[in-house]
Image (cartoon, rainbow, N blue to C red; front, side):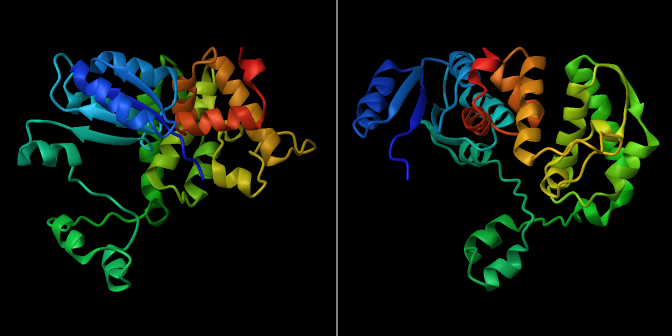
Length: 272
């Protein structure tokens, strides 16, 4: 179990930055500091951190703006928000009380695996959205939406998704729900230069885990999951000139996971 962590402190007060550095470095943690949100976000773009300590009230980008951008970049990172101007409004905004889960929380409450008081605090206006596998008719609409979105975001001009590729997308169960579908379309857009998305352009974790080849791929070439993943990561890295942030976004994983895979597959020198 790890006992040392990479921690980033974003605070406009030098005294607070120094205090955090002194208090947290005694356990052997690596501490980096930034005096404002812009510098903090730039550091997060360049390297991976386990924890961010973020001041809420700062000049320029506010703590709330920085928090939003951090979560857009990396949903897994832990952020601790600190402030000397505590109000209920700030607390609610920082906590983003729009809670979503793929669990049956009422069942979890009965099984005592989720706090009952917290359930009733969150369950003010419950909205039940069926899993994507239970509304397959939404897949084509969502896929086309994500194609337009990432064509614009990535500066691409992919014309459409072929009927064969749409059939593959519609028949898949999408255990990762809409997020997994979005990641699959973004990867296809990123890794294709032009034309139409075909079945061979689609890649998602469940297909690889089952050893399924993309329709249209070379049936005589059977690679291990690790080999296929390594090649996929290298291809994405080269496409983005080794940029960790852009590559991890395109692959649908956080920076920490990508760096771990780079080390596992020994591709650092290839990227450089």
